[in-house]
Length: 109
Length: 111
Image (cartoon, rainbow over all chains, first blue to last red; front, side, top):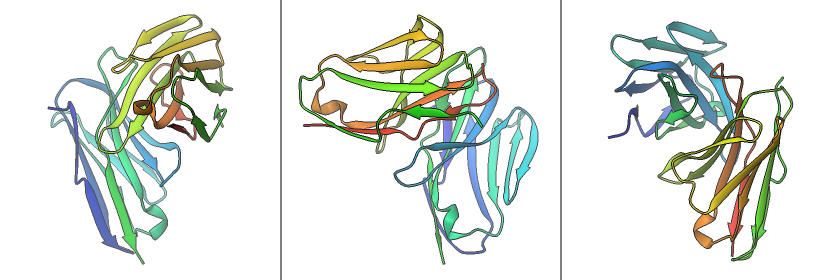
């Protein structure tokens, strides 16, 4: 079993819908990251969280340390949000990232 | 903005060739990483370096070696390229767990 699990694997939604992608982890972590990868492109770091909530434009990331769970929300989704979203964690004492398998998001105009 | 530059976007090499993938970062980050990304397998760590001349094996180091002679440059070496090393290769750097910056990737095809 992977230490970092993401759901759903694939998500298709209409433009304007509110999107939620979930990430759960089974071990202690020092930080959780949300990454975005457009088709054929490199990876962009969206958020790094160790507690609470962060917001950047239409993107919101939350983390619940007790429940070992994080969510990435996109409000007023747009076709340009179509990408793979990857959750990754620094396990305690570890510089390396442990990755979820990614969520492929498609927003239909 | 921190920049991580990978020397090639696309590369085609023949089986048995020695291949160098170069990665340069411009923000004095201690840590640098090489990953490969394959459909259905996600991102897997090949090697990691936490300082000049220091390296640590990742999850799939077989068939690869690395070099970090200067802080800003981390090279991935395929000693004898094989077709199963056809993949997307991504470099990243980090100032000690304070966020990661990724390069735009090198899509390597070994024929």
